[in-house]
Image 1 (spheres, one colour):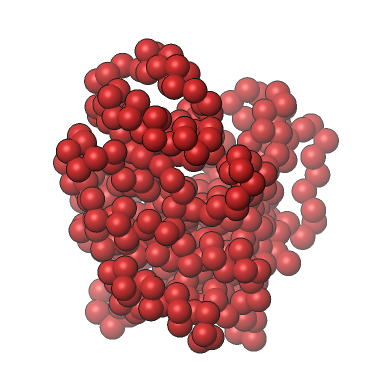
Image 2 (tube, rainbow, N blue to C red):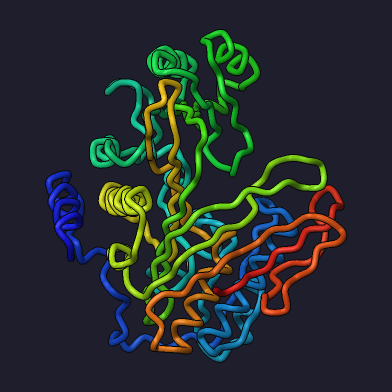
Length: 392
């Protein structure tokens, strides 16, 4: 461990983070029976068909890695000769039927949250004041522990708090207003308070009280890093890389995949890679955020997590970096994570594997011969979409 990381560790401990050994390695001596199948559970009320079909193919990859069968839906459970390893299509909560079958993080791929808001970007930022409205289960300690790991921002649950947050943040420059969940959807950049007022006029107050909003410092010339960790059976792997952007058939800019470097071990193992200073800092911030969430929200269970870290310039040209939100479920990077983990297990001589997921639109798209196709079909607009994974 180099001097730079020792300094980071000291800062994390002084901030009240969990011990450096967290999370513990999976318990392989408990005597619990091994799963006989991977069961993919799709929530079609919260996912697009092409995403769910992609995730189903990733779940098939998990089944191949574990050397077990693949099945879909809880209706398959009575026909299995033993326990299943579950892959839900979204973060689980107490209200989910599948949650009754999950006892700990070894049982499933993803995350379980005791309150729905914990699975969203709302937990990234503090409230506007100690007296501000917040949902049951809210942790005010989280903001104290992640102050150096996130951008300037506020989470709000009333129109008055939204206006107070805007007045504070607009002094720095333009502000990005976000709904709690979703990639790019439901975001708008504002430069003046009256723009927020127009937004609030279109929002049902009851929905705001229940779901909240995030107001966050806007960055220019931004790029997004991705830091993740996967616990699967007796294996633990961590990943770091960058996200890609692409354009769909209608010219809209969308998430277009990612390129990641994957190593065995927890997130600390990423510090042994030859990272740029800015990528190293992104890992530091993701690690601090990860530990703070586990510490501040009892009942949170995570076997697969990823954190998007945005880096860019403010309107005065100053550089900033911060975690945007957690992802405690299967997502667009999962195909690369599983393919890389399989490669590491297949060849113990490898220390690092680079993997990438590509999302390409257009009728003439060709998948490289060396790639594995995750999806080849149409998006919700009927335009051809291809997703594939490559190693190297």
